[in-house]
Length: 283
Image (cartoon, rainbow, N blue to C red):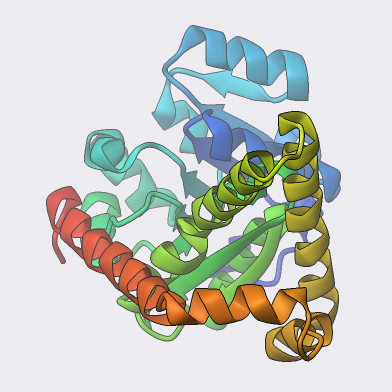
C-alpha cells in the first residue's frame, strides 16, 4: 500500500481536497501552478456554487460525494471548518482504511488523536497550520506528524503545502498552537499595526488615502526585506539612526511595554487555540 505515495513526484499525485473554500481553492491553484494536472485533483464540496466555481476557474472535478472524491486519492486534504471535520470524515472511515491515503488536515485545532479516530487507526495523519497569505502563494505553514507517519509520507504532505508558500516542521503537536498564535493569527497583528499607523498619519496631517498607501507599502516592503535577509534585529538597527526619528518612535514603543504586550498577545492566542482544540475533539 505504501508504494502509492512513497517518493511520488508532484505530477504523479492523486489528491482529494475536502472543502472548496478559500484554503481549498488556494491549494488547488498552487498545485496546478506546480504542474499537477487537473485530472489528478478532485474536490469534495457540498455547495453547488462552490463546485461550479472550481470547475470554471480551475477546470478540476468537484463533487458533492466525498466517498467518490477520496476513492482513488493517495493524499486527502481536509480543508473544512474544524467543527465540521468529524461529520465529514466519519462516513469516509471505511474507504480511508481501505485505500490508506495520507490525510493532511488544515483544520485548525483538530488534534491528531481525533483525526485518527475518524479516519481509522492505521491511516497516516499529518496536521498543517497555514496562514491567510497562502491565498496569494505567500503563506507559511507549520507542519506536524507523529511517529506513525514515515519520512516519505511526511515529505509528501510537506510538498503539498509548499504549493502555497514556505513550510516549517515542528517537533510537537502542542507547538502547532504557538504556530497558530504566531503566524496563523499573525497577519491580523500586522494589519492592525498598519491601520493604526495610517490613522496616526491622517491625524497628523496626511490625506487619508496617502496615509493608507504609505502604511500598506511600508508593510509590504518591510516584509520583503525581512524575507530576503532574515536578521530582524540587524534590519531594525540599520533603520534606526542614533538620535533620529526611528529611535524616538522605538523608545516610545518600548516605554509603553511593547515587548510585554506582544508576549501577552501571543500567549493569549496560544491559550485560546488549546481551548478551542478541546471543543473540536480532544486527544
